[in-house]
Length: 181
Length: 181
DNA sequence: AGGCTTTGTGCAACTAGTTGCACAATCGGT
DNA sequence: ACCGATTGTGCAACTAGTTGCACAAAGCCT
Image 1 (spheres, each protein chain N blue to C red):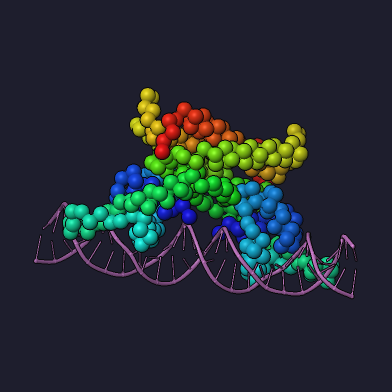
Image 2 (image 1 turned 120 degrees about the vertical axis):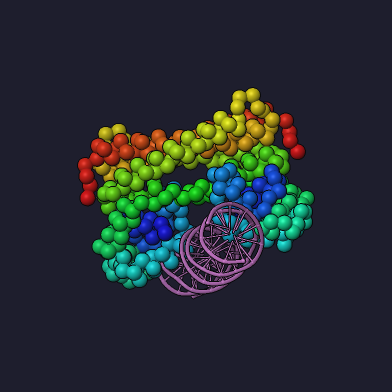
């Protein structure tokens, strides 16, 4: 039940069309709540039907026929309610850890290459986050909104840091392991 | 497509009935791949139908009528294949980070209490993992299987450590924030 | 003017996970 | 011998997310 709220947040930050939302999910909100364009269009339809957002009638019938949406007061209220409501953390699910555990029983053959690949991906993501931090949060900005957004980015950075470290450590262990299987 | 493989791993570690699996998921595998008993029974049925596991005919028709399963060679082969196959990391989804981002737009009212609650939950989980580490991985054990399992546990410990630190940091920021909304 | 790619919107079918319930067998107490 | 709690197995319906496809409009190339 979080996608609609992710969309409301994005629309409050800036009214957008479906495609614009999709792009913004790809490069910002999507870092911790990903969604495909199909999901987004479907959800926009629902939110409009529920009266939480509405299509901006503006500047039609121009190019491509793109529809922009804005959040209605009811939508903002719902988002505030949801933000404040207690929610239990979701049970974890991590495929890579599962595979490692499986490797303890069936052997590590073939796994190492994929660990290296993951390490590379996490390094790249970390570098990207660091870029964003440098660009969007130079020292000295401390409006409450910036602080909160920076906090979220920090979580991303620290998580990626954790993964790169852990994967490095895992690969070092692999190097010492006899070739099981 | 990971639940069947989680079950295969658990069954290779030790043949079990549905309920036993459920319990083990609750306290071990479930730390990174949770599943309800309903899911598990359904999946056991499928795995049996596909010929990857089979019911142990043994010691029937005893108590409760519980059925134990063991992994067949085809099942072990499938698990090995899956473990070695490259898999992209799943797009992240974290509700708490999403809520923080929403709070940047609609105000932080009510959120702080839930952050505290989460901090407490993560602390508890961390303590539990540390207990397990002390109990199951005393210094000096280094059979390959132990090393791999220890590695997985380390990931759990480090992740929980990250969350407790990040939440602590977030709460400190909140303390300095003017009461938005 | 013709076709080719990009932009933009969307439906339909499928898969995985969740929630709610049912119901039989056994065990422990009275 | 009965009764409630626990153990153990499972179905059905629902929800959220994924995958695959369709198709129209605009812009670009030749």
